[in-house]
Amino acid sequence: MNKDKKNKENSARQKGIPKSAETRKRMSLAWTGVPKSAETKAKISATLTGRSLSAEHKMKIHDALVGKPHSKERKEKQKRNQKIVMNRLEVRAKTSAAQKIAQNRPEVKEKNRIAHTGSRSYNWIEDRSLLPYSGEFNLELKERIRKNYDYTCMVCKLKEEQLTRKLSVHHIDYDKKNNIPSNLISLCGKCHPVTNTHRKYWTAVFQCKIYRRKF
Image (tube, one colour):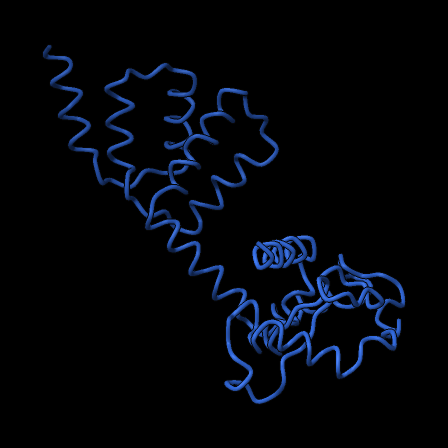
């Protein structure tokens, strides 16, 4: 009992006293591999919780862990801890805000645009844009399709009279030669370009809209 009391007094006296690198190394080696009780672990955790680490300290931790193999239990623990952290509302909000800021940077926008332009786009088909429309796809047919849909964009529901230009007429299956009325739909100038991505999705959406109009 007296020994424990004496150790605590020594510990209290030495707290805050800077230690040399050699002393810290000896202390570290002395504790390496020594199992800690649940109470000791809880104390260490409480002491370190909320503590901000310096850049130098973070780099030391990083260097110590680089190339070090992790056990299966360690990997599972890291995965669980990461899920817990990422599910916190404040962390999710912070991550979302950071991603929005990053995506709105001009250099990031330009990089994304280049990465999805021309043959790099997953919708790319060689020379498709050069394919001509058939003679059936004329002004009379386009006007008939606009009238069929009450001069309304079938995505945003804006009327043609609210726009600065006429509604576009879109081929639902993206085949320029398939000009039957059930394959054509009216879209505004803002929504029409959007349908050039995720084509399977938009095809299904428009086919569903036409089916509902029939019944």
